[in-house]
Image (cartoon, rainbow, N blue to C red; front, side):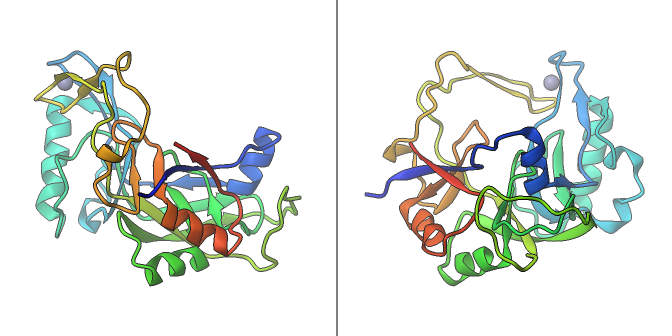
Length: 248
Ligand SMILES: [Zn+2]
């Protein structure tokens, strides 16, 4: 039986070091948040989709903002996207979902194998992506990262990095585990899709019964990226940098 590992960023000495190594990621297009008249909540979820926003929707300003819209406007925007999005087989779209493309801004040429600059994904160097592809790692999709603003600063890494600048893909996690124990759904708002989970009873654990067979996946109800022994070994076999595994 495999073990499960939470894949995450290592500890950094300062916030400055963290930002210098990882940079900043932006997905310019996505659904705004919602102010819902039914449940009374103003909220937005965090999820990155491997789909490009259909280009004829790019000039809708509500899809290029981090703001909040009414529930009726939100429903209109979701319908407009679903109508144009080809091959979408995911669940209901929710407020806050982000689309491709993805841009990277970073103070110096990026050299680490993993860049932790997004809440709901991670950027991986081409060599890591190639290893995942060669080994048929499932549960994820790769999307090209556009390097936008690359600074000229020289930074001192706390680990050994490649001498060459890397190119990256966004590792978009499309799978999840079954619900962890105690994660009862208290309510679902039919109008905006908001799901309230009982945080007090939820246990943040990964037990074998929760596994759906994927190599990489989110622990359901969280943004924890979980990997199997197979993935951890592949990453460690090439001495990948800027990644840390915590046993669950
Ligand atoms: Zn609602």
